[in-house]
Amino acid sequence: MFTPEIINLINKNTDLFWYIPTKEKQKVSKELLVETILNYGDKYSVIELLKLMGINNVAQIFRKAIRKGSRTKGNYQELTINYFTLVFKKYAN
Image 1 (cartoon, rainbow, N blue to C red):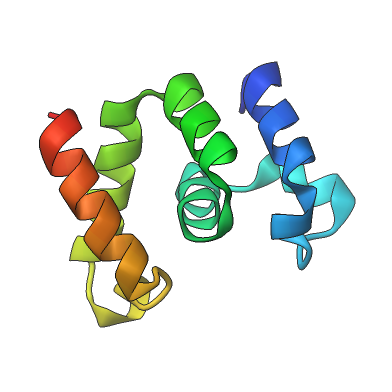
Image 2 (cartoon, rainbow, N blue to C red):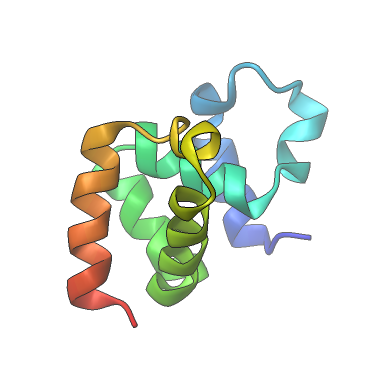
């Protein structure tokens, strides 16, 4: 499902996925990966995510998630929504 580089990113940030059993971490969805890294990752993990998945792909996943409604949008922090909405508006298609 994921490239070895993305699996390495997940392994480097394993503490962000503390609630997922070790064997299942490589099976997380792209939506959960993007949400977790954008919400809780440091700037290096965000940069790596954008490099590996592409800024347009990450922006598309992010925008789709915050458009779905209050339940899904509630998974993103308000500051995260505001910041990445501005970033993706400027740098992504």
